[in-house]
Image: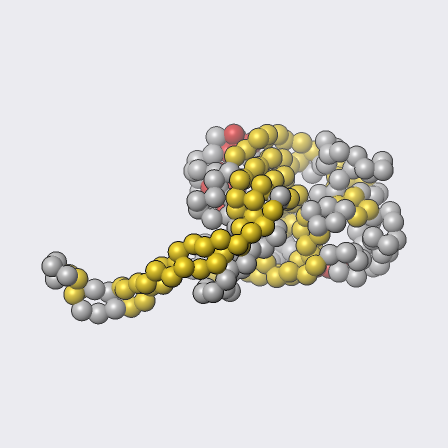
Length: 242
């Protein structure tokens, strides 16, 4: 499979749980696929057709901590604005909120196809997470992922159907895709968060089940571990491709 491989660094980032509005806001420990789809669109400068697009990644961070940030809670209002006499339609209050942040983030992003021109000359500022979380690209290359009978996986997102196969992973519900052509409708799905290093040729890491993959896409430029290359699971974005 031909992919664009991008090394991304961000001093600080946060991937907010979408159903938390007030109170403490925790972060996902891995970026949702919808976040990375938006990241690609930002580099390109327009909405990219998500059909047949696939994304995979490896993500790490050095630390996690809570800090305070201001939220502006806005609601409908009436009356007029001060000296101008203009109608007042919105009114807001500033509320301090505890938010969880990740520090020293490192992302190896794989996107199916050749997007090297967009990543080498991004249309908008490079961010990862919130709009103020500036990031930088360290390397951009186009390569061919290879097929292998076995691989190792670490610090990545895996599909829910592997739940009977993988023994050391955590379940998480995340946004796979946000349809900006349909009122920003989100499509959620269940995934497995894998932070440990596992190998597919060892039964206490990877059980043989009907759901198990029979071959694996691997990065030929990754560091080898016990003779195995690092696996890259490429996730489709749209529901019909999943």
